[in-house]
Image (cartoon, rainbow, N blue to C red; front, side):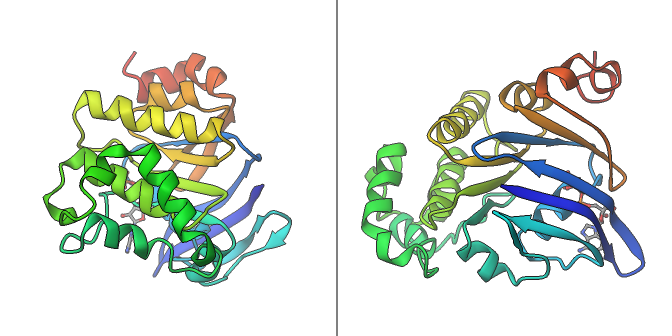
Amino acid sequence: MLLVHEVDVFYGDAQALDGVSLEVPDRAIVAIVGANGAGKTSLIRTIAGMLPPASGTIRFKDRDITGLPSHEVCDLGIGQVAEGRQVFPSLSVAENLAMGAMIPRAKPHRARNLDRVYALFPRLKERHGQAAGTLSGGEQQMLAIGRCLMGEPELVMFDEPSLGLAPAVVQEVLRTIRDLAAGGLTCVLVEQNVAVSLKLASRAYVLENGRVTLSGTGEELLADDGVRKAYLGL
Ligand code: ATP
């Protein structure tokens, strides 16, 4: 579904991604693992059209999307749930969700998608009139996911979805991602909780200093000595 081929990205003179290639098959969960500063967020932002690659190509469903602006990438069906639960704090839950349905592909299906999001997260329905900034951290993460789903994506990139959440809520968020994938959504998952993300993922890539240094099935990476030492503390 998504093919990233030898992508280089720079911030000024500093190279954030160096020849990164990866493949995300239809309906898979693909995990991206790496230390702080390895380039995970830069990779997501590049795929999303927010950072232009200096070279390399990005293809989505057999179409070259390299260099397309982010609203066009989004309208093709690539959504992202950014790190840090970027909800609009002064808008209500329902208004935040409506913002997710502003793109042309999603507008006609707004009512149906709202029903789906409320079925997935009944808590959001209960709190539809409440200002998003007054929700708990877990509820804000649900809202960020729900808003992304309102855009009717086929592929969603999750950047650290469990960051800063209580353990029980982390489980709920990860269960939601697993259920969405089981329902046919293709997922790219950047997650500090490496063991869990490798268990969920059918394929995973290790990024180090902007380069892919290892890839394989989630199980292969879980069994890899280097991964176990560097990311699992074993
Ligand atoms: P983290 O888990 O800490 O978010 P990451 O793997 O997502 O890390 P990136 O945020 O993609 O890594 O950062 C990759 C490199 O690019 C780092 O060296 C970082 O300092 C640099 N970088 C990121 N954003 C910018 C920016 N806006 N301007 C300049 N350099 C940046």
